Image (cartoon, rainbow, N blue to C red; front, side, top):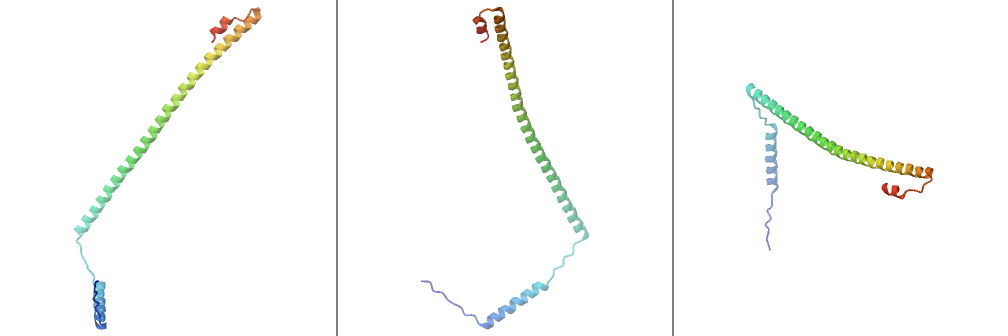
Length: 133
């Protein structure tokens, strides 16, 4: 087992340490440090601050331009992709319309052949119907 030693503190020690702390706090509170800078140093500090702000403005401007370029590039990619898809469907639509035009042409030929056969009172020509299949 560990044994602990307990130190007893007198009231005089506490009072002395409290007075010492108060005097140190008062010294820190009322001590002021004054530093005088030459006008040349102040001017150079102001110029340095202006350079930093100009540099940061330029960098932020370049970053903003890059972000805008990336956004416009992404929008352009999306538009081109959408255009390619749309043009594919347009060409498909024209192919379907051409096929339907061919089908309606065959139907019209078959109907006219049928009317011709009915008018001439001939039997329906099966060979003609086989041509349209």
